Length: 119
Image 1 (tube, rainbow, N blue to C red):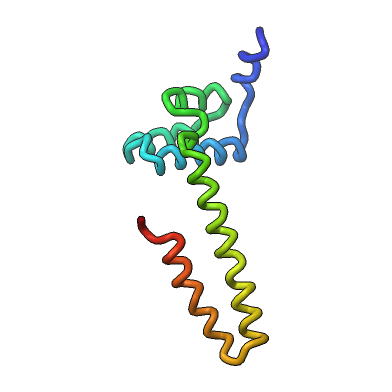
Image 2 (cartoon, helix red, strand yellow):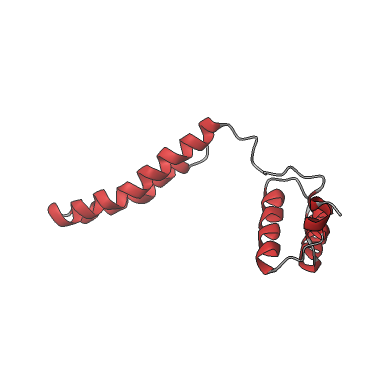
């Protein structure tokens, strides 16, 4: 028996099933599965006992969902997330150092809408 066949016969545990379910959910959220297919495949993931049981569930799906995104889009998200993480610190500084600095907290939802609003 070769190594690949041995690996396929290995029993899986809860962690592997949860990882497979998360991957399946991601595939569904990216539109590769309809609700019925997602439901059927989710049941198959829950019933899987070995790695070989999981293989046919993902056979017609890409290994890494979301791989077709361009690096520019990923970079764009990164700088926006950094800005959103730093704004509360700036607002806290205003709250402590400036009279009526608490008004800086009002900038959070406005900035969020500007950065993450529909385009």
